[in-house]
Length: 364
Ligand code: ATP
Image (cartoon, rainbow, N blue to C red):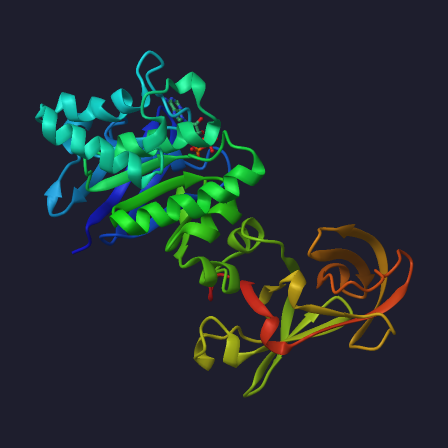
């Protein structure tokens, strides 16, 4: 049995099904992110694990114990809120010590534990400061120290980076992951930022309208999205709707407008030929922008015209128009002159870059 299990957990507010029949198993020491657009039920799920929101149905089991009906303080989980919720009139050390005092831990032991927690988040030198005397990143680290000092079985993080600017956010992502590795605490983080979830999680739980649409490693969720929603929500995607017109031992041929796209059985998410779509099935295929090659001389599979371009620093993002419609192409910035808008180019891709992301009811 997994360390933390949510079995058929639902939450309704009146007629609104904020979370519906959610099933999730988290292993000990794992870092799992709940990811999805605003209103998809991430925070409600986290709050049900924390005990701040009662479940409408379903069970939550932690380390073999059913905690569904327990009060938040009986669950003993570590929580970092979006606002950090530090006590303004207490110093950093007092903030961190608070949870230990509530648990009546002896003074000597609590002093040692506070020191240890502050060392872990590299804030020993600021122990006597007040929250108002700290930067956003430092405040966030106090909130983490306060949550982990009680040695919780699970650490819950609700959009912990959302108050930080982009640069600090990136630094704190590395930091948070490093801290989590050191203490080994099972961690569940809510975020709507896909790059944040991909970069620090062992697994991502992608949610849409109260339901899980895919649970996977970040790499697989990106490389093998199981549906249209995941392919668009995680990273950029060129999606083409078409009809299967032929089928051979190696490939499925999909007619898209006046063109054909081949999908290799070898890279198909369901590699058994019997799982592959049939002739006549309506399908959607996905090609990631960085998997499309762009040839300035116009060579390649499809002629195309550059309609716009965006400089991203390490990359160029081009929008091109071709027989398939609009296609996004992402190229490494190798220091060459970029291709001008209006130029005619050629685009191409490896067959392995093409994925099915949606099929008709039979293949669901
Ligand atoms: P965000 O990223 O915006 O925080 P979220 O994915 O965390 O969104 P939730 O806060 O879990 O989403 O909300 C899910 C749905 O439940 C939303 O439609 C929200 O309006 C609704 N909801 C949440 N809390 C309550 C409540 N206490 N009463 C009524 N509806 C609620």
